[in-house]
View (cartoon, helix red, strand yellow):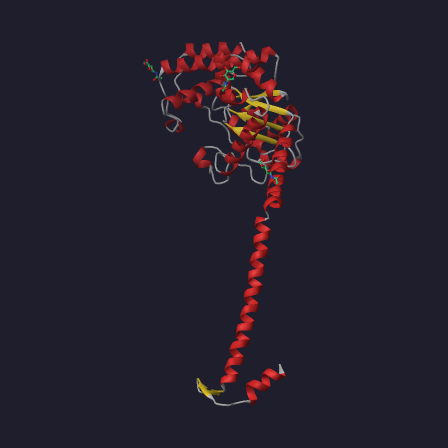
Length: 359
Ligand SMILES: *[C@@H]1O[C@H](CO)[C@@H](O)[C@H](O)[C@H]1NC(C)=O
Ligand SMILES: *[C@@H]1O[C@H](CO)[C@@H](O)[C@H](O)[C@H]1NC(C)=O
Ligand SMILES: *[C@@H]1O[C@H](CO)[C@@H](O)[C@H](O)[C@H]1NC(C)=O
């Protein structure tokens, strides 16, 4: 450095005026050379760095192996997750009974993943011939469905009560996901399950049982049949909004007859499933779930053989306040129709508590 400084400042042969400062040509040459040196050092540094990055990203085999390994272990972990599932649960029953609510609160349990209307029975052909992957595929698809509903669908946080009529979001719990492992998975589409079984028989259940190899169980959510039937009538006649007015009544005997018959066909198919004794069925009453949430949650958890901790029960009980309306009063029933329904009710043990005047 002293030499360079000496050259620059002590040998002014001729001077050149740069921006009003007099500099000798030697001084200028030295500054240019020094600048070029620094620049080339910088270029060298950055070229090296590029090479390094290139190696890091494109180190052929080593990197491919890394990707393969991480994919394999992810795939393996997912398979192990599904292999650890101990119970497969389906809902059975009638539309507009409270199945969606029960499914949503079970999906919020840390060990339970329940899809919303995936339709296992109708889609079963897609899984049944795949003896190797059928089970993993089905569980993966149910899991994806549950996740999608938690993020964007029925159970999503942004879905307000006014949009769906009911709130299915459980804040701070495990909808769409799980903690450590999954013990129970399944699907809720009670109305479709019972009408499918009514038409096609129970063979599909034996097939499912054979492929999934863990106990298949059913949750049967029950509401007063007078309300089930009346709600179907109102829905069919597009009159559910009108029915909010207490004095409104639908007077359509034919449509009512139709839904009385179709309701009891579903009841009959549930009763046959009960009688077959092949699968565990838990009867739960939607009005009791609202009135006694804790007792009913414990019942559900013990049926599914999972532990229900206090935090889960407290959080979930808080959304169980929505009483279903007594839609039976929005429909005109002849006394013959009332008597017919009450007589049919008596044929089925799980319906016996109900009358036109009961809850
Ligand atoms: C990664 O997986 C592919 C496809 O299975 C295979 O062809 C390839 O050889 C694997 N690479 C390494 C480095 O294991
Ligand atoms: C499944 O296998 C049966 C015969 O065992 C066949 O009739 C049916 O078409 C197959 N279904 C699908 C979806 O491949
Ligand atoms: C319902 O309609 C029938 C005729 O279709 C009529 O005889 C009956 O009085 C009506 N009932 C009520 C409560 O409006």
